[in-house]
Image 1 (tube, rainbow, N blue to C red):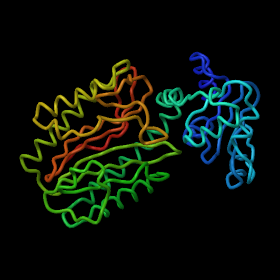
Image 2: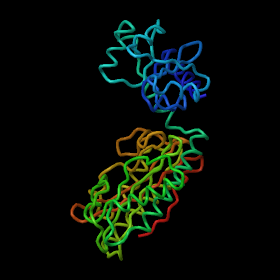
Image 3: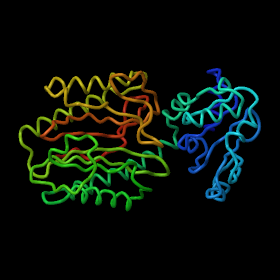
Image 4: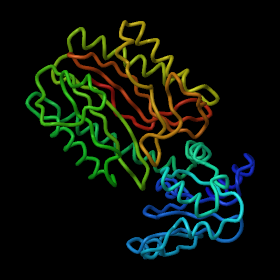
Length: 348
């Protein structure tokens, strides 16, 4: 079905009729299998999935409606692909060296045409099955946030918070983390991607927890900010500013709206509070088979929200030498606006 959509979209855009897909995530998207070398989609006839011997038996057992072909030791995948090409060939992503090798194999570089943006667009709009899987990944991530909230207190380390959150997600059914869990405290909350170290949480510290679960290849993303104690006036102002920006941005996420408009809504609220220079990243990004994919929610983005997009809404304020706040949810774009898929409470 997804391969049919690829072919139909390519035809509308006057792209080649033969496709060679090399990006591992794109192959998973099109076939449901993880661990192949390449996917060949000919103009006519059966699609071919090339796999090494380590994944051959599994691929034969799991892949449907596609021929699984063993890539033997010493065989050159570029030469094999070239045997099926007489005219133009649509290719997704390759390193420059591999692109040149494929160009040589097919005869010249003019025969190759990139379809990476085309596949990017297809993957950005999730179908019903994908949405179900992401919903489950979000449910699991909520359990991770709950466990983190219960663990946070003065004297506990960042790594202990991350460990308890990840354990809770595993117990809730996660196939693994969607990315390296972030659990940072104190002044390190000013680092948007601060990781989880052996730093000890102190009384009244900000603590940011950013995590995600994976369910059948699909991912979720959620961030909550906590206080290990009682928030002071400055902490409360930062938190409430980010929370308001998060809510207003959520309300602005609708089909046919430029994604940068949602970013602008959040950014204007933070700027009005005198903290604009401390909002140092985009409002959000798409989520699916990868934790960062299309569309992009940023000031320079030309993307437009479509029904079926799954994106993050994650405004933040990061004050060097002091700390920071980020509030993030994974959100589904529907015909009626935005639906939050992550549902953990917002509590300092």
